[in-house]
Amino acid sequence: MTSSDWGRNVGCLLPMPLTWLHISDLHVRSGDSYDRDVVFRALVKSVRRFRERDGRAPDLVFATGDIAYSGRPDEYVIATEFFDQLLEAAELDRCRLYVVPGNHDVDRDVGRQLIRELGSRTAADEYFHPDAPKLHLTHKLGAFLRWHQRYFDGIRTVPENSTCGPVELVQIRGQRLGILPINTALFCLDDNDHERLFVGRRCLDASLQELNGLRADIKIAFMHHPISDLSTLERQQIRAGLVDNLDVILTGHLHEEGYAVVGMWTARNLYCAAGATYQTRDWPNTASYATFDGGQVTIFPIRYEDQPREVWTVNPSQFPDAARHEMSFPVPSELSFRSLRVPGWDGVYRVPRPKLGDAAVPAVAIDPRPKRGRSVKVIRAEAEDWPARKQKGTRKTKTRGRRRS
Ligand SMILES: [Fe+2]
Image (cartoon, helix red, strand yellow):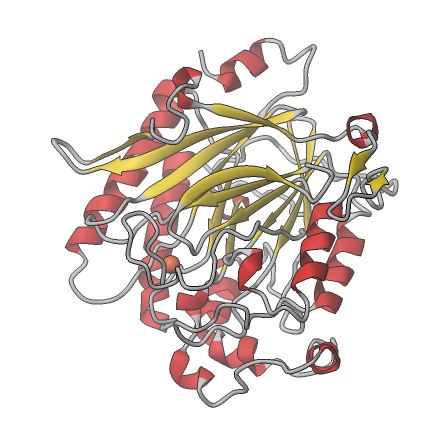
């Protein structure tokens, strides 16, 4: 019996669990597609099998960037086909798919005509002013932006004046999810992006304010890069904003699967890196399911196996000693859990702050697990973060499982 089954059986007593599938780094490109088709076809087939035979049915799918390989329109045509097949296998409508771009979704030729980075906090505040044009988003990420607006037409629209949002609140079986997409790819250009990327503090601030008005039971942010890739001009503030406001942060980019509970002195954020869902069959291809039951998130990591048959199955190496190779992480939602006085980085004991916001804003009820073609209201969305995992000098290390691009 899966955790989902268990939750449904005692649903009258406990919050009904909800499940999401986290994929990342698809690297879709034109040319010979055989290698990728084998992996994608196996993933679609396995998602269907997990749902039909194991009761592991995702309510949401998050894709954390690098959908394409070169940020070209033809690559998103291929991605559309894959997403459609994946959603059909999961029996989900498009409104339950959430996508942010990564460094491979930028057009580098366009990017070379734009400023490489921002030189000061003042410059960043000016650039991210809501009224300032953002050519990095509308041109450098133009193919992704146009694809996203078309694919999710009538569902959600990527703002052209912010890296964050649209914030959404969805209600699934009584659980209220706040969702925040964060675009970390505006200042991506080449293999020297580390510590040169910007989210924009004023973009995140505005979205967090919106997010905290939703009274979500769990707040999920998703983005491509880890926090460590952000410029030092804003990195600490972005990290603090996410730590103080989010429960779960989903990332990609590193091509390395990993999970950690992080949160300065509060230990209140769960960081999930999906690894790369496709980076050729010569490298590990991974993804994960996660189930939230009201108090914890249980991770079920999966990976692609190439022989003797192409299949996605449980990845036992992530949690080798855990039952069914699933691992549960607390996602504290009660203040009392965090109200212990604990030492901060400077040795000073403090009382961790409560979640910000939580204003009384009613959620719009949404039918659980909408089928394809059914109308589902989307309410709003939110943001996300990831711990510093990459150190300088390791970027080009081509260790199996740590490759990134
Ligand atoms: Fe990637």
